[in-house]
Figure 1 (cartoon, rainbow, N blue to C red):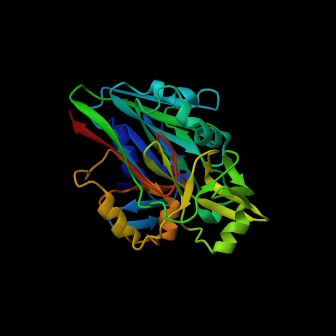
Figure 2: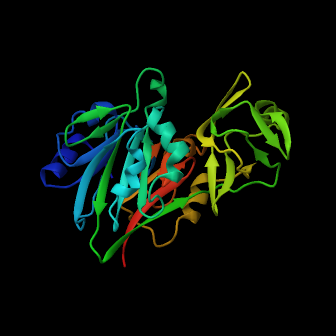
Figure 3: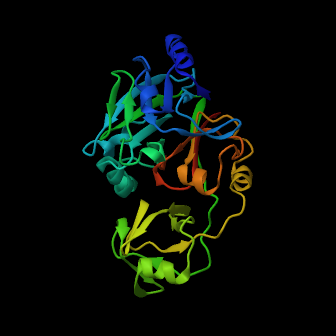
Length: 323
């Protein structure tokens, strides 16, 4: 839910454990306690998409949680994020955008110890788009009040034996029937690609085909469709919001019609009140979601989603269900 600073203070005073999303100025006013947070001013609320600098989004940790711990991670320790996650429970991880940790997680998360054996979800903190170049995305450790631009923060939540956490990813994009696209190296940018086995300049290929760069590249990663979104095309260099990987076959995504309708139809019927949910800022912008709803799920609209690995243009949620 979206709350003002006074409501958040009352929640913490009553002993609640929270995951917060909001503007830096608001998060700096939150008293010390068992909370973590990240900067972002874009949200999907119960009434629709909203941009606000005056309220924060609050995810309350279930009262049934048996153990709640906060961990700080940098590039040398992030490989242990899944190992630190309780066997029966989940972790919410927040990483600041544009940081070395953001890049490392994006490129290497699939090889981290115990990844996919534990539930690891979260998001990439960001800033108002008007503040690009003037402010830095931050994460907050509520125990100390420390704000960090180069480290990540996680809340590790243990659950009793009768409950189990489940991670879900909603992706409204599917690979189109067009050319098969590969890349000669993994990374967040490229100049070259391989189209149906032939080497080409990637930006030249996009311009020649008049491809819609609001649509992502889509690949099959071990049975799951994963998106890579285009950030910019400048001087023959294409930059991405998530890395492409060498040897993976991509296709340009099929066009979608109504974003809200596609999300509403894709969310499983039984998922009504997850303990965590986030969506992508690109869906917010390209789908023109201001004052429009994407089904029943609410949460921050982020600079990237974490559903084990880094994702783009998806909706990620964690639900807790009876075993």
